[in-house]
Length: 149
Image (cartoon, rainbow, N blue to C red; front, side):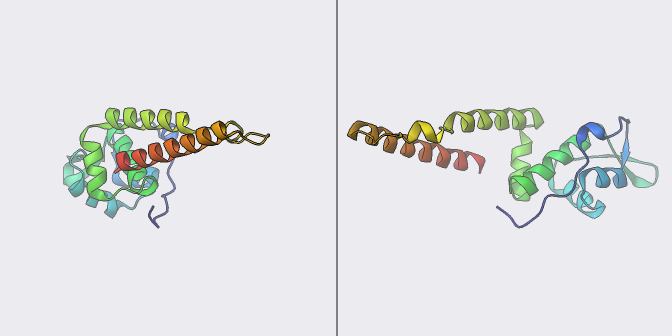
């Protein structure tokens, strides 16, 4: 994980519904400085706000949603700029579907401790089963870590 702390974002549902947002509004919602947002335009092909009179950037609601995903990938999940760009190439829906699948897999991996630990002294067969379950859980967690890269 990285040392970067996640910016203070506005909950997406609390963002007013407008057609266009200025760069200062986008900065306020995402908690990221405007110069960083301008830099991200050079790194993320999908981030392309509309330019209006005087070359001012105007972000759509979809652009704001994309910025939230970029913030999440960089600051929460620890991706590099290039890694986040690769993740976003498939689109936001694919990213959300992948995240949901990972969550389902993680939920299935979670084996309650009381299932693994018996209150009575375990038989040799139970000890083998416990070791096998622990080994499988570790392998699945390693696979998940590889898939996140």
